[in-house]
Image (cartoon, rainbow, N blue to C red; front, side, top):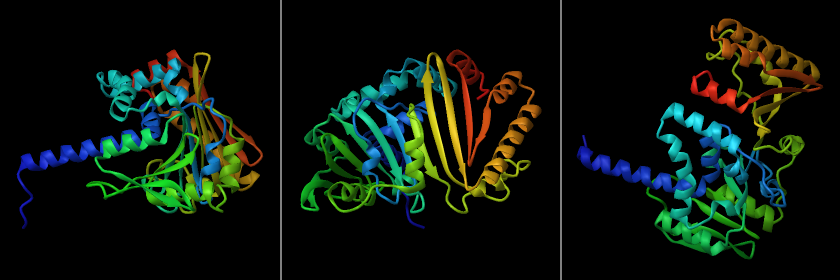
Length: 343
């Protein structure tokens, strides 16, 4: 048996690993920080253009987030409520996310207008197959300097399709996969592993087409909100019997091709809207019946009156081959539900 080192050494290594991963997340995964901070977050901003025009053709997931969420007071109430349930001190930490990002990178997060997370989940998990496109007012030199400082390694500028727009680390990181940066021009960047970054650059500077097909069509047809999501449901991803819901027959979802979602706030309310796109009208009817039955079953089995009322406020409608699900409520009521652990 080899010596794995002292407990102190292992602890120091673990702390260093967490510190490096935390820094990489802060820089490359700021969109993930925004989304995860709110539980379900987002907003679409005022920058012209559509980031999906840079996403590679094989993308089967598109998640659009707008940095305007940072100034959304209604959303912030929900963020604070979720954080307080987990950890009372975490409420203060939410405000620190932005300041810490800015202090450590020198980049003003408010100069970032739009984020698009794209991925091909058939090729692997999002952190391996996905990239993040950012529309911003950042200068390229400032972005690369910030990355070099935080990753503690130099980035080399290399050519891609005759353009000096690809930046790659001079050496692999101690933990995790190397992260690349692509300059799409005019303050637009793509961050992530090598393959998705090169994929987005190929769309901008090469002959590759951007994402199209069912996912892109569903994405374009879904209204803008704080978060807009469109993703395919790969074959085999729905089990015939889900152990998490043993009394619900989820097999109807095997005939679902695309799922869309929107999270938004409006006039003191917050809501989530979903679109489940089935292969046929009959399949959509089956999906609606399953959802209606699940809501009825769960609302009938709970003894919590607030949760029962919440479940009964979920609206489910069929429109052709699509099943639309919607839930909206007052911010104050949602905060009460969250803080009472009913959500």
